[in-house]
Length: 350
Figure 1 (tube, rainbow, N blue to C red):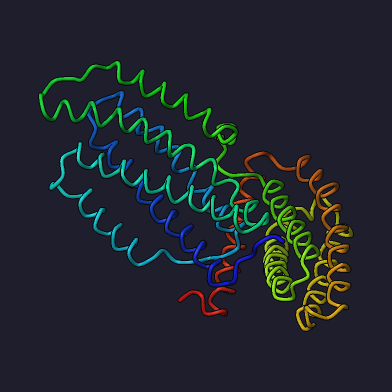
Figure 2 (figure 1 turned 135 degrees about the vertical axis):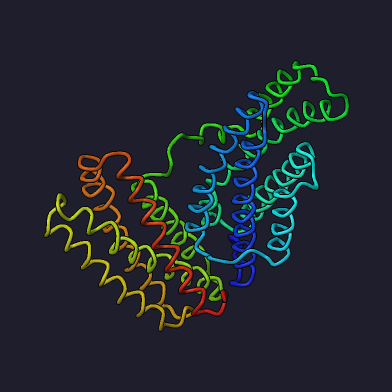
C-alpha cells in the first residue's frame, strides 16, 4: 500500500517549499548586488548566468508549490535568518569574499532542502513525486552553482589575502566538477530551459497526470482513512484546477475553440463539482463510495481527453509560445490564490 501523509505532515512539506522560495528570492537579490559590486568581468559573467538560472528557477518553484497544492508561509526562523543576512549583505561589515561565502552556504542549504523534499516525496506516494518532479532542475543547478562559487571564492580569497590573482586554472577544475555532476544527477540536466515558464498545455497536463495518479492510489487502498485522504486531495485539486481553467483558460480559447465546445467544458466542470460534493457527503467506508468515485473518474477522463486533444490543438494553432507561457503564469497565479483561500479556511494559514 502506498504511504500517505495526513494534513499536518503535508503542510510541513509545503512549509519547507515556502522556505525554499523565500531563500530563492534572497539568492536572486544577492546576485543582483554582486553584479553591482564586482569589478571582475569573468566573475560578473558567472553571477549573471547564476542570476538568470535562479530567476527561472523561482518560476519553477512556483510551479512545484502550485502543483503540490499546499500554500504555506516560511518558518519564522527562516524569515529571521533572511532578514539578518539581508542586513549583512547590504552593509559594509562583510568583505565581498565574505558575502559570496555566505551566498555559497545558502546555495548548500537550498541543495539539501531540495534533496530532502525529494527523498520525503519518495516515501509519500506517486502523486507527490509527480508534483515535485520539476524540483530536480533546481537541485541540479544549485549544485552546479556551488561548484562555480568555489572557484569564485578561491579567486576572491587569494586576492583578499595577497592582492594577487589566483591560478586561473581553477575554472577548469570547476568545469570538470560540473561535468561530473551531470553523471550524478542524470536527466535533471535536460530539464533546464531558457523558457520563462512552462506553457499552458504543460501545466494542465501536470494537473491531469496528478489526479489520475490519485485515482489509482485511491482504488488501490482498502483503508477508509487513506481513501478519505486521497479523495480530499482529489477534491481540492479538481476544484482549484476547474476554477483556474474557468477564469483563465476557457475565456482565452473561446474565440477560436468555439462557443459550443467551450460551453461543453464549462458544463462538464459544473456537473463535476456537483458530483464531488455528493461524494464528499458520503462515508468512504461504504461500498457505494468507490462506485461514486468511479463515476467521477470516468467523467474526468472524458474531460481530459477532450482538453488534451481538441483544446490543446486549438491552443497550439492560435497561440504563440510566449502567449501560451503567459497563460500558464496566469493559470498558476489563480491556482495559488485559490489554494491560499482554502488554506485560510482550513486554518492552515494566517
